[in-house]
Amino acid sequence: MRLKVRILITTLFLSLFGLVMIYSASSYSAKVNMGDEFYYVKKQALAFAAGLAAMFAATKIKTEFLKKIRWIIYSVAMVLLLILFIPGVGSTSYGATRWLDLKVITFQPSEIAKFALVMLLAGEFSERPPISFKYAIIPALSGIAMCVAVMMEPNMSITMCIGLTMLTMLFLGGMRGRYFIFASSVAAAGVPALIFAEPYRIRRLLAFINPWDSPLEEGYQLIQSYYALGSGGLFGVGLFASRQKYLFLPFAESDFIFSVIGEELGLFGSVLVLGVFFVLIVSGIMVAMRAEDRYNSLLAAGITTVIAVQTLINIAVVSGSIPPTGLPLPYISAGGSSLIVFMFASGLLINIAGRQAKFGPPSTQTRK
Image (cartoon, rainbow, N blue to C red; front, top):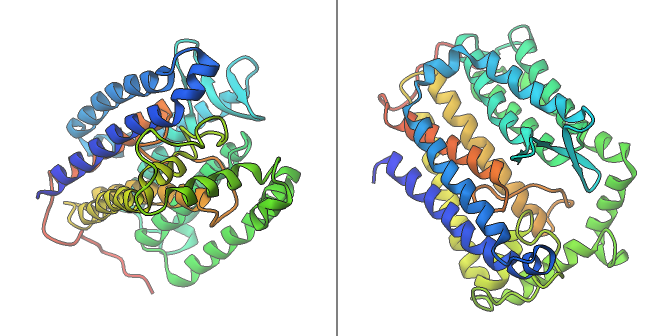
């Protein structure tokens, strides 16, 4: 099967499967809170339709044009992040100002920001590989500035995603080993600093270590996720038969939707879903390796990195492998802006896959 067909099929499968699981996970809470059991799935269906249009548009865009306007795209993303803090513009929920409220539509600028940074770094590193800090300083500072803007929301999960993506791009771009190790060490040291900077993050860390110490507060969500995954067994309790969705598991339709998947479809169904993600990610890697030039190679690699990192973080959170942090599962979790942006990203991968060169992108720099 051709790469672009494989990417299209996996993207559509995950997105449509997400519609089914969003209905299953949210039907009860939507009926209780919104008076309409289809409330969330209808919103996601509209986003899916917009995502199809975005994906189609992405397959037709000349990626060279994206390279030319990379700084404009990055600047727009930064402006969108910063205007969140203008009173009356940013929408605050659960203590975080992450949504831009345009009355007609509400979306998260951070979803756009991740891929805006990928486009910027791909363009910069294709022209001047970051073999030293001299060549990496401006792109790196641009990434750090974006991380700071996202942290101000606050949104540590997206910050982690952006940070890991930036490090991956530095490595793939050609940064020399000793510089990359230094940059990675600085980034790793920043994680505990960010955690201990806010009391609520410390409480989340303690709840992660032993959620049963605070079963009705910080540890509650993780415990309910354990119950969902544990009760699913090998083949699950059956589609639409989740018990945790009856207001026991918070954010069952969004950040913790994989817990409902595990409960209803069991280990077997969960592994199948992860298998589809694996096929999509491997396909993205192959697109990057076979791209016609260095820019498209780095662009495909960056997009694939965002998909992989965000998927891994989400699964790690719901399974209790890392401390809880809010991050949607790509293509599946409820969230219109997330779905539209990820489908656009899939469209870019399809675009690049349709213009492949011989195996291995051209490179003029070597890492020492």
